Length: 94
Image (cartoon, rainbow, N blue to C red):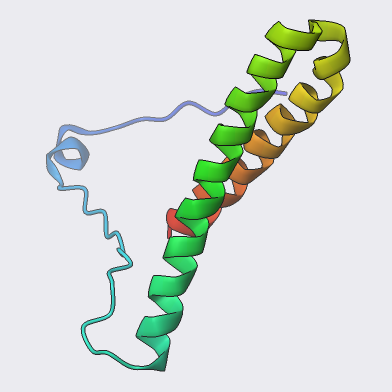
């Protein structure tokens, strides 16, 4: 399979590249939609805080009771953090 070569001219390089990005902002007016936005943002932040807090607690349990007893729970928490990070990246990026 042959890859075609890309030939550029000096005029092509002088053109401007325009990138348009849409950003989700908080609502300006106070209505049912803004209540939903604030509530979902609060719950999202609260869930992230709880995830990190449980991970820290499980590390403390590993120190107290041994790594082998706490390892399954730590792995589940790590997987949960990875899944939540992937979800938050797609929902907050636009």
